[in-house]
Length: 279
Ligand code: SF4
Ligand code: SF4
Image (cartoon, rainbow, N blue to C red):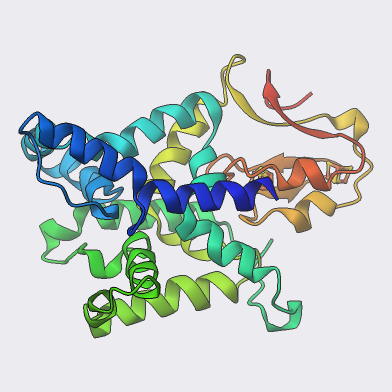
């Protein structure tokens, strides 16, 4: 229930017609003569700044001076270092909506790759391709952004039908892949997040490093309390929990700190807390 409330908060903060965080920041900056008000998710883009940072740092600096909201993805990455990627697991509507709808789909209708495929190599291969794509003549435009697709759906629901008219054929392919094939109809509902979200990949890279330090928060495993029931493995939407010789391990490259495993464990063998990765 708390995750659904967090999802609604994410919609209110980032997505038009609400976009409370985006609009408040934009209006504050406009009063300083720094920005023109566009109150939608593009003002807090989570993708393009990653690309600028690697390929054109001068452009990133120039854009951030006009609109500090472009720093959002890097702020989230630093927070992930200390707290794990809570944004992905709790606030991001583009990841949470397919995941929650996925719970209503019968298991036999879902593509089940859990335990058969390690998402991390695909995820970070995609991140490298995403960064290099403009250099190789490709495009990383909004048509391929699930975050932007959701903006258009929500805008249309609230009466802005131009948002749907914007959909080109490539955007519809993105929508179908993100929402249906790798969302509602894949086991866990987080296929797009696992494979094709550069913002999530960046946050998990920081989490992977930060989780090594004892003072950071992370999902931790207490071996002596575990009876190998496997409930946490089934509960994990990102397939981050793996069973390994009477034990389990958490894949920090994909865990988004949703805490579903903590709730599912009947013995308190998993916790979101400070300390070593396992005990
Ligand atoms: S390991 Fe636990 S906290 Fe991490 S994604 Fe899986 S269920 Fe969520
Ligand atoms: S749900 Fe708890 S007891 Fe069961 S395998 Fe996972 S950690 Fe062990």
